[in-house]
Image (tube, rainbow, N blue to C red; front, side):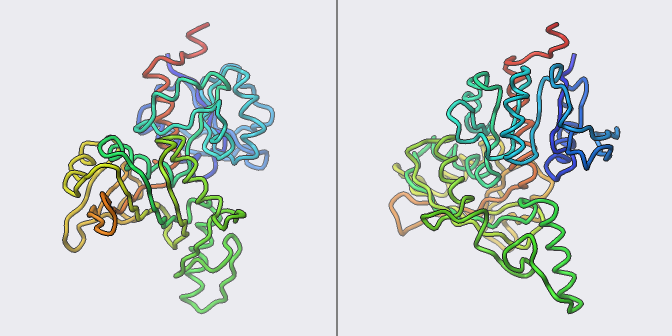
Length: 344
């Protein structure tokens, strides 16, 4: 018998992607329930060849639901995830609400799947920030081989990371520029079309933004608290896929060829790295794909034991929806949960 799965935030970019991925991966479901806010009651979403009508979260009973994939923002997750977890339903949350809670595992299955064992404390498991997820998938095998001391990362993050309204704004501004109409920023602080914005999330007292802080703290929790990391997060006029320029300093020597060989064998990673025109991955090519792509691997002669590389992944998939579904698969494959109906 399959598992009953609820998707909270089913009408959003990530929620729809969760439904697609559940179908693509033939996740063992007995039933899928699409949940959203009152204003989305009755909105239709696709699950494989089926059409689901959204129900309202506010009055839904989770007592017979096995897994809840939560993608409705931090405030809703803070209110609802503990309630859902109290009904013995495992919540896999895509917001930042629970990532830094010591009683909530923060999981990227290719990196720290074993840490999922602590999920019963609150019946909540956290998904990392989209930019962190692809970064740690790339760093983990290199850390195992040569021990990372320090990471400097600059992100080039697509507008889909800020939601559907942000994607609409990029489209509308691009069209306006071509026909000489006025361009008015709404979702972003400045024009995003044909521009870059070095500002994602709110500013903190030390001058970093919350997005940059998330990468620092989450990498330590997922991978190793000893790793030092500094980040600059930049929004770019790309619809889907986040890119990162990554510079890593190691304790032990490691060559570019060694790193290339290690990454080629790593789970979730695809290396596309030819020293020729087009011998690298771009965000356009990574959109719709599950892998974290690595290109431009090279040695950094300015530090001892240094490497630099380029990293690209679909932020709606590995950065959010896919990672959440993979966490659910870990729970099932390790027999950490069983269907309620079967157990009854």
